[in-house]
Length: 146
Image 1 (cartoon, rainbow, N blue to C red):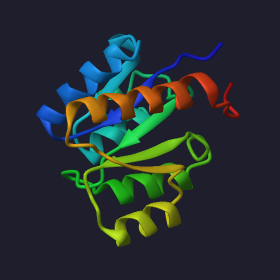
Image 2 (tube, rainbow, N blue to C red; image 1 turned 120 degrees about the horizontal axis):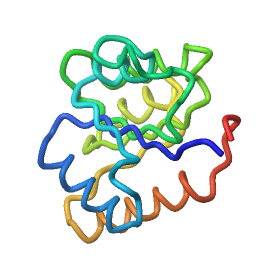
Image 3 (tube, rainbow, N blue to C red; image 1 turned 120 degrees about the vertical axis):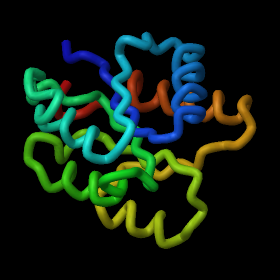
């Protein structure tokens, strides 16, 4: 059985911490979460490059939660690279962002996002959202990699 690794791509330390607390409360083991703090780090992890060059690139995450406004490489560009690569094209990728911009929603789906979720500002709502995301993407959803 494949690992249930989550790749969380988040540049805001406060939102990262909040997400990790919410995932932990939802029953996700923190050792199953890899955090990339910019777009380049996310791509390095996925394609086993840079500081992740010793990682097995065939071990793809179960799901990617991707913020859009990322340093170095914007989240939409990261998404395009994920979806254009044969090894990662079918990894479920959820845009998890605070953006309300209609163009971000459209561009996200056009670029291959599997879902677009706005981050809730209220912790209880955020926790409920993370719990639902964890339940669907890690427990219910079946991928070609399973």
